[in-house]
Structure formats: structure tokens, C-alpha cells
Length: 629
Ligand code: B12
Ligand code: SF4
Image (cartoon, rainbow, N blue to C red):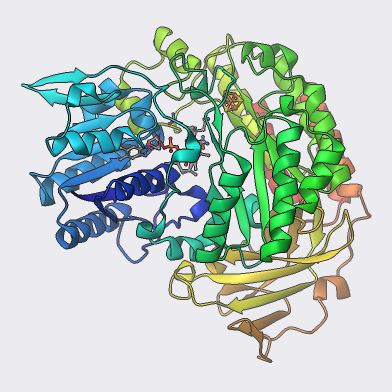
């Protein structure tokens, strides 16, 4: 059969043009492609990403799908994604219906896995497959070719005589991961995705200023059952990890085919314990030497993996630059309610160990569990302020994703009256699962976001800025530029450079602030980039241009060789701004808002202008308005 696979558009509803790096690609499609090819089918890909130049995301998707259908003349079209891909899938199915009205559509991915009946009824594909579909997709194609019975395929949904037929649901269906063919990225314009690696979040790429990121899945599922996560689902698949040899073989093939310099391990639970991590790192060190591999890598695991200093030092030797835990909360009460199975002390310990091993560490705190109260919010924010300034840590409100225990709780509470509306507006609405009144909870969420905007990490002025003349679709015909920022890390005092894609039209007049990590010690830092206005757009002070990576002596646009900020403008004393902000945040945490504003009014005028204060001033302004109201 001729099968056309169409993965989702990244940020379909929120940003166009947006670019998709391989780290954010939906690898499930590469697995499905490989399984179908291995079964002898002809498989084609249409990747509706990395295609600027259209008027809207819809226009781009429309054009790409229409062309792909015309070129490949498929017998079956596969689409899919996660719950947030609903609007994309709705658009994609309607486009497919227009250009290929008789071609059956197959839908898969976790949007189907956790809500098959509803999604199938709403988006109306001919077939949908829940769960891991590496084997079932082949069974389905066999059945469609007359070599099998549809009803013998688990996790399948289809329509017969106007009625939905759902076959036996068995999310445990799926064999040994070592037996699967390696995922096949070749049909999804992987080269374009690699070139778009700069579009990945800074966290994934701060270690290299010419990032080329490849993903790998070394294990599937997770044995824990946190209430906000879909892995808490009752009938879920089992946690299964591939052998180290099997993973190394895939890395070898990927490295030879698509030379990359950053490998992101997408598993939710990589290295369940330190023995597994040590085994992986030991083999990786050996292979690096044997094959001359030169790449950094990142992984995520659970605090209960209990990684110690030796294991982390070994990981560092094997090229690991960063690892993360799902932190979720620093309140024991909330962690218990989430069924997280961790203690905040484990986080503090991991932060200290990562610091010693010089590996980056991070994770997110999420707020809004049913057990959340003003006190537990304060506990987490206090922990954040005390321990997390130098790690890559983000704050957000919990969303009830389908498949999670909290989603069911929200349904029972009547918070999701219309599912179709829920899917269309997913991530845009705030859900109050706590016992706090809605207005109070909304106020806390605003405060949490303001808190996150606080520049807790250390700020350093960049010492040199080079505009790299790289020809790349990301520059959008020259409207955006690659700025290479050179700085000395305030933590380890080593020099490094970081490349930021900038839109000079949008750079604020007071300068650009870039939060990233040090390429050596991986600590979170904020780079402060002084700018000046040149012919109506912002350019960095003391610009140098580099054409095609080779330094060329182009005249700098009017500014001197030494940074003028260093040359003339006085700075606040070391630590002064930080002490000021910490005091203010401390007062806010205690609920002493009036005292906070009074302190701000008294102390702020004594401080010299500092980019780190810009967002902070905004926050106090909002606080003042709120108090007045
Ligand atoms: C890469 C990734 C992303 C990428 C790509 C997502 C994608 N479309 O796959 C990006 C960056 C876009 C992303 C974003 C988010 N993600 Co994410 N992400 C992942 C991650 C780390 C890896 C996905 C992956 O490749 N897995 C490996 C493959 C093999 O598994 P799979 O995708 O499930 O594929 C199998 C089946 O689903 C099926 N299948 C998949 N596609 C298709 C297609 C067809 C046609 C068929 C027949 C079958 C099929 O067969 C595959 C092979 O067996 C997973 C965690 C994980 N380790 O799985 C989370 C995960 C998918 N993400 C999740 C979440 C919550 C998010 C966010 C909502 C988080 C947030 N709040 O920001 C955002 C959404 C942002 C937004 N608003 O758009 C959840 C899933 C949510 C859900 N209910 O569906 C996961 C499971 C993490 C978690 N434990 O909560 N994510
Ligand atoms: S949040 Fe993390 S640890 Fe908890 S069930 Fe999900 S993947 Fe597993």
C-alpha cells in the first residue's frame, strides 16, 4: 500500500511561522514509518513545518497536504498527535477530505490513546488506533488488503453501518522494543529540522552555538502514576527500556547519517537507577572513543532513581550536559496528593550534586493540585527562591490533560462542560481544582507568572557580539539575525558564546535580555545585551559581522571597539540589585504587599538603571494597581 504520513504542525494555533527542531518532532511517526516500511509498504511523509512564506499556518498546511496528496497518490493517510494537536487535526482532516475524498484516514497518537471514542466521533477518521501502534498499524494494513480481520486488531476504532466499532482495548499490547525497526526520519525532511535546531528551546542547545539536535527514545511509558500525568492511566502500557546495545546501535546509525552534536533522550524515565545510568555512560564513553563521537546529551528521570555524585560525574564524562526531574511542587502535602512519590529534600540534594558534577539541572514546578493552598504555594516559591536561581526551573499552572486523574476530577466537578470546546482551547484556560475561590486562584496564578519573570539568576553583560551571516529559513529573508553573544560565566568564570536568533525590530530599546545556560558549567544565566538604534532598528553595541562563519572585517555600524557601557556608564554595586529583589520577593511571599511597595518606593530610586529591573518594575506596577483596586 502507499501510505502518506502527516505529523502535526508545531504551535499550529499560536505562532506562524514557527520552526520545528527534531527535539520537538513527534517521534511516533518515525516509528510508524519504520514499521510500515519493514512490512513492505511504500511510505511517504509530508511534514507541515519549517515552511515560512505563507499567509497563515492554515495556508501552509493546506498547500503542503494538497501537494503531497497529488504527488504521492496514497491509498491511506495517517495523521495524529497529542491532545493539544486537536485544532491541527481538525484542519488536516478537512483538507484531506477535499483533496482525497475517497482515501481512508487513520488517526493515532496519544490524543487517540486517551480519548478514542470522543476524538474518533469528533474528527471522523475512517480508522483510529490507540496506544503503541508499531504492530497494530501493520495488522490494520494487512486487514485492509484482505489478509486479516479488523476485529482481531486491538485498540482499533472504525465505523460500520453508521455505528462505531471499538475492538478490545489493550494498551499493554506492544512487544519488546529491541525488536522494533529503528525510527525512520528520512521521509520527514529531517535535514530541514536539523537546520531548525536553533528553534529549540535554549535549554536544549545552550551547550553548542551551532546546534544540530537529534532525539532518541530509549524507553517508553513510566511506572509512576502522578495524578496530573496521563501515565497515571489505569490500563496503560508497561514501562519498557531498550538494551544499551540496541540504543547505541541506533545512535551509531543516526550519527553516521545525520551528524548531530546534541542528543536529547525523550524518555520520561531514562535510567531508572544509577546502575542503568552507569552502564549507559560506560558504553557511551567507549563508543565515543571508538567512533570519534562528539555530542552532548540530555535526559530526564525521576528523583527516585537516586543518582549519586559518582554516577553524575560519569555522565558528565560521557558528554551529558543536563538532566531534569519533574519537580512539580516543593510542598510535601501537594507531592503526596499528586502521588509523586518524592520529597522536596531529594530536589535540594539533586541540585547540590548537579552543581558538584557541573551538570545542568532543571525541572518545572506546577501549581493547582486539589491540595494546593496559599501556604503550599508559598512553600514552593520559597524553595524556588532559595534553591533554584541557578538551575533551569520554570513555573506553570496545572492543566488537566485527557488521560490524567485530574482530567476525570475536573469532569466530575463540571469544569469541562463541552469537550470539543475544551480541546479547541486547550492550554488557554485556567482550571481551578483547588478549594480556593476562583478569583483568589487566578490572582495566585498571575503572581506565580510574575514571580517566574523575576531575574533570579545572575545577569552578566556580554563582552562581544557578532552578527553571523547565516543563510537559513529561520532568518525569514533577512528580517531576523543570528547574534552570537560572548560572555564570561559569572559562576565558573569561563568564557563561552551563545547564539540567539533575534528580530531587531522587536528588541527593546533598553537592551536584550537572554536567559540561557553556561556552555561549561550549565548554570542558568541571563545575558544582558546592550543595543543602540541604527536606521530605525536595534543593533548590538560594537557589532561585528561574520559572513559564512569566517570573520570578515566589515565596518561596525558606528560604534567603538570597547563596549561603551563598560567605558562610561556606572553600574550598581555587585549584588545590590539582587539583594533588593530578594528582599522584595520575601515581603511578597509573607503577604506583606504594602510593605513591599513601600520598600520599593524607598529603595528603587537609589538604584542605577539595570536591565534586570525592567520586568521587575512591571511586576510592582501590577501589584500597585491590584492593591489600589
Ligand atoms: C516530543 C514531545 C513533545 C513534542 C512533540 C509532541 C508529539 N506530537 O509527539 C512537543 C514539543 C510538541 C510536545 C509538546 C507538549 N507536550 Co509533549 N512530549 C513529547 C515526548 C517527550 C516524546 C513524544 C514521543 O516522541 N514519544 C515516543 C513515541 C514512540 O511515542 P508516541 O508519540 O506515543 O507514539 C506511539 C503511539 O502514540 C502511536 N502513534 C503516534 N503517532 C501516530 C500516528 C499514527 C498515524 C498512528 C497510527 C499511531 C501513532 O504509535 C507510536 C509508536 O508506538 C512525550 C513523552 C514521551 N516520552 O512519550 C511528551 C508528551 C507526549 N507530551 C505531553 C504534553 C502534556 C505536552 C504539552 C501539552 C506540555 C505543555 N504543557 O506544554 C506540550 C504541548 C504544547 C502545545 N501546546 O502544543 C504529554 C502528552 C499529553 C497528551 N495528553 O497527549 C506527554 C506524554 C508527556 C507526559 N507524560 O505528560 N511534546
Ligand atoms: S509525571 Fe513523570 S513520574 Fe509521574 S507518571 Fe508522569 S512521567 Fe511518570
